[in-house]
Length: 584
Image (cartoon, rainbow, N blue to C red; front, side, top):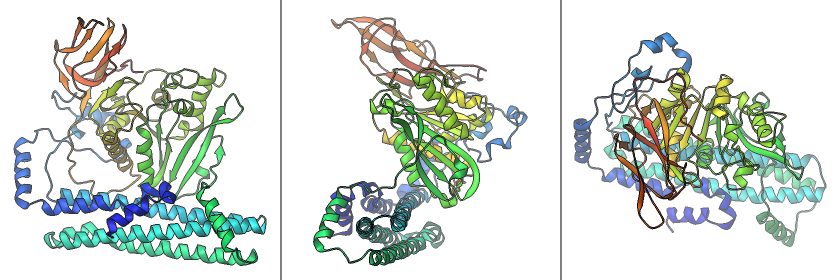
């Protein structure tokens, strides 16, 4: 059986369902190598010529200096670019777009994808080995000998599976390196090839042997402890233990704490916890899941929150991928990620808190208020107050769709640069409405931006991937992580920077059709929506009041008077001191 099919079968075994996402995507890398080999030199030259002929005159280059490196006077001296796609931003000289394709772009993309896959597998193995070791030590210190022996048997069975996982996945990584060398190495200059795999390839074998050695040490420790527990188990007992193991969720207990305390956590570690924010009508704790990645070196605390509206889900897979691909041994500072802030709303598949209130209109909350206000108060004071920077992840509301866009105060130099680094389709200048989490964070002098990632109640994979790259850009700019190729030209399109935006509302009810697509331009007077009555007659036609870009729109055809039609972004020459798009 071919290796690719073997690893897919292994990943889909019933007892490996919780590990499926961590298996090597061997087929994807084979396809990438094949695509690289099929790309002819003359095709690459034609592509370069075409891009050279059509490249824009605007040049964009994101500054990677620390956010605090520039003063307000420095920013005020910079002049913007007067273009339909840009406002005259205060530090627009930092925003240059340069479309110069590099010869090794595809090889660098392959390298980055390979690095991510390797880190994912390596970190998964290290975390599981540490978890098993902790279980063995804890169970060996106390308890009934029979229970200890049973628990140690669980660990032995888990080690068998983990050993197979290590051998299968690291063999796959090694095969990818050899396949690349065989098919493409002869056509790649030696200097380029050295930069591609000179570091990663040896690490594959080093980490493989390191994990296997750690596994052997745990196995030896288990053997010693099993001897202390008395006679070994019978075949029947082993079968019973195997069945119980298959039916049991094997995971470390996740502690419940009252507030986030980063200083108390060990460096070079990823810690899971639940933070208590209240109690429900049964007297049970209402907790939110928190993942803290604390680096080996000191640095800022970046907080990433998601699902403050319970049905806005795209931030959750973004956080999963970010943590999964993170090397905490090389991290400067700490990342605090909250996959779901509004757990009651999440469980009810709804935007609002369980009492029907919009949490993003209740901040900073009130410790003596109603249940939603107390919950908002505890979010802010138990979690968000500990951040140095903050990214709040949202999506469109129910019945609407969004572009990938950022809301930020563009008059604040730090949030201005965070928005640009996010590299969305659109940036909307917004000084944060009262009651929002972003507003509360800004009032605590915590620079905060809101990233709107696609549509509600679904996972929008393309936007999630793009938003993740933006989060990584912010990490690089804060010097929390290092990327060697960051000086390479970024091949992205320029975001449209809007000085303000507003919603257009319906004055009539009926069946709604909104014509323009999101992230498209409309001209003043252009028809943007029509409403028909139940007999099919057009009863209202709506036109764009100004030239602008479509940030979001309604897709719910059932429309009542006062419902939202279209979110229009307006490009102007300066940013107002106070602006609110009425977003809810």
